[in-house]
Image 1 (cartoon, rainbow, N blue to C red):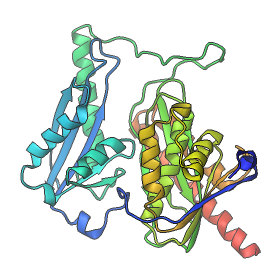
Image 2: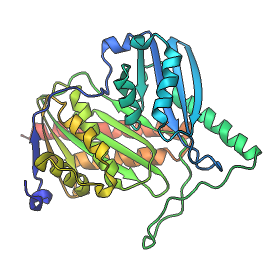
Image 3: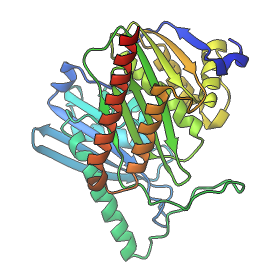
Length: 360
């Protein structure tokens, strides 16, 4: 495949095979008696806390009953520490536990899955612990900030490094919560059109979104610093993982990121990894290839120019933007509006798709 046709919508094709970490739990997973969820974070606004990773496990042994377990570590590799603590918490009940991990924490999900836990990605309200984990995180963060303030350890949030030639807006409010919304139907058409996109700012927030022609949606936002190409590449992975859980025979993933497309082209077309291109790590490339080889459908990736009027990409762009913006405000103030806008975008895509079918 030649790089000089990328702007004309060149296609990437391949058959897919194995299963990866699922986004949608099956009936056996849902029926497990122990539900758990985990979130980790850092607190750069607290002096001498830059290298500390904080985390929380919420575990539910039944409807209406849950316990939270807060920890932190300065270890260079925090995941083994977190895994050991989780193993201590569930003890011999590993096979009876379903862990729900937010999409942005792929490494946590991967490590826990490789250790034998049943893991799904994405905050799923069917998981009893997942219903509570974000509220518990906000409570713990507030407590840590209050303690730091009493000890005069609180400082202004560090600004991300900015390019000297950019005229950038003032720093926004820090992230207040982590919007995550997914709406996946049980039935899908034999062929799917999927739009993906991402949104990021210079003050540490980013979001990823995916929407299909019949309205299935995955969108989440969180802390992010780096090149937008990382998130745009991540959005393609989200779409591939979504396809692993459908019976779709074929799909087209529409993207408007030249950076992500170049990396995909080299990975799939030439079997090569562009070392560190746009900050896209080798680990993320391996994650892509795992998802790329794991679907059963035949998939094409098409690159378009940004904001060229393609409904799927415009919808994904809007979803990512509103999720990122919503993360800047208290959850109780913006979540109803966020959900309403997501649903209106879903309806717009469904109507557009139906009208297109009727016109043929």
